[in-house]
Length: 125
Figure 1 (cartoon, rainbow, N blue to C red):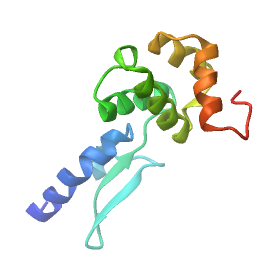
Figure 2: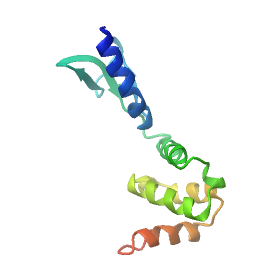
Figure 3: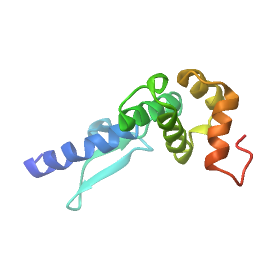
Figure 4: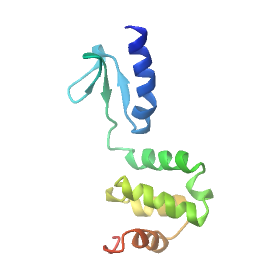
C-alpha cells in the first residue's frame, strides 16, 4: 500500500469510527462491506456497525460533540443533545426515549417536552 493510500485511510478513520463503523482490509471483507476507493483503486473496505449498540454510539458521539456526559449537561445542552439525537434518528429505536431520559437524569415527560419543542408539528411520541 502506498503512503498516499495510508494517508487516505488515516483521514477516513475518524469519520468511519464516528459512524460506528470499521475499516477492514480486503482479505477480511465480506458481503455488505463498502469499498473505500482511492484514485480508482479499492484500498480497504468499510464495515458498518451492527444495529445492536447503535443508541450508545449515537449518544457517545453527541457527548463528544458537546463535551460532556448526558447526566452532566446543563438544561440547554440536554436540549441540544436531544435535537442532535433526533436528527440522527435515535428516537426511532425501540426504548430510546426511556434510555436517554435515564442517562440524562430526567423524566420521560421532560424528554418528550424537549422533543415537542423541536418538532412542534408532531406529538413527539
